[in-house]
Every structure is written in structure tokens, then in C-alpha cells.
Amino acid sequence: MDLALHIPVPCGGATPDEIIAAARRAGCTSVELTLRANVNDACDWQAFGRRLRAGGISVIGTACAPGPTTDAGDVRAVLNALLRQTASLGAGTLVIAWTWLEGAFGANSPGAPSDVVHKITELLLDLRFEAESAGVVMAVEAQCRHDPLAAIAIRDLLDELTTPWIMVALDADAAGLVSPGPATWIRTLGPRIRRIRLRSGGETLQRPSTESAAALLADAGCAAMIVVDAASLSRGGM
Image (tube, rainbow, N blue to C red; front, top):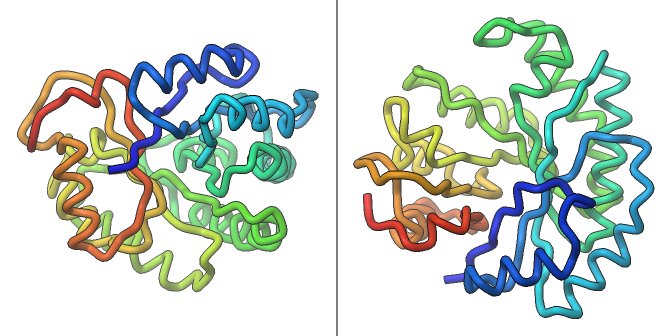
């Protein structure tokens, strides 16, 4: 089973050599890097990616580290920059937190009103052309609320968008804290899942191991990549 190690330290805060060493300790040959939400980042991302590949480590995806945003125009510029940075690293997935998008559109309450959902959807649809040009899928990290219908709503929204450049990222730990649990989320969203993250921490009945998560994804017809925290590699079953 191929697993990617999540690197929580934003790029620039960890050197390629440090990332290579962390991945090797975890027994991984690929990583998911964290990028800052900064349009003025001057890092040579192509050189950064080459250094990692020279050390035997590939970058399969990136995740946006939430930062201050002011309006939708700012978010669009940031996401454009992140798409370019992700492509320069040689990665094919950019994970974007739904809660970060909500905050940028002024939804500070637990649950975005329908007009905010519409604005976010329109933004992502506008960006799909940039995503296609970069060869990078935008995977929006689902907000797993205490609502058993949330997974169905996300599935229906993705089906309406009808583009392969917008998919969903799932945090199994967050899904495990709410009904109906990660297994049902995976079965409901199926091939729409681009990436699933398994966090470290004490085991619970709702936290899947890497093996059971892989089995659930396979049963759901999903080829999502599994991203792990270093400590979660030694965790047990469901």
C-alpha cells in the first residue's frame, strides 16, 4: 500500500533534506506538502520539487495553510498562486479547506448560508480552467458536520459541477467524530474522493487504520491517495 506523509510545516519552514528524512523515517516515498496562502511567495518551487525527487521522494499533493484573506478577489489570487506552486512542485492535487473559503466570504457562523455556498461554487467553477491548465485537481476538504445528510449534499453538489478538476478531500478523523462515521462518508462519496487523511491520536471505533481505509476506498471504487501523519502509521484497526 502506497502512503504519503503529510508535512504540516509550511514549505520554507522545512528544508528538502528535512522533509526527505521525515518521509524515510515514516517509510513513505511521497509527501503532501503544506503551502502558505501567500501570493507573494518567491520560493523556487521547481527546484524544491527536484531536490525532493533527487532524494527519492515525490510530491503527490499540497494543502493550503489557512491565512488571512479579505475578499473573494483575494482568495482567487491566492488559489491561482497555489495552483501554480503545486504544479511547479510536480504535484497533481491542491487541498483547500472549506472552512477557509467560508471565512473569506464572510460566513463566520457554523454552516454557510446558501448564498455563500453559491459564491464558493462559482469561484471554484471559474478556477477550473486554471486548474486544468496547471494539471492540478482542487480537492475541497469537506466540513464533516453533525449531519448525516452532509455527505449526500456534498455528493450531489459535485455531481452538479460535472468537472474532474473539482473533487473532495476527506479527513477521516473529523468524519469519525460525527454520524454516520468515515465508512459511510467513503461509501457515499466514492470516486469523488481525491484524498483521505488519517491523523495520529488515540484509537477509537470510528478511526480507521490505513489498511481498513484502503479497503473501504477500494470497495467504493475510489482510487484516492491516503495521506498520513507519521504517528498514524502504527495505529490499529477500526
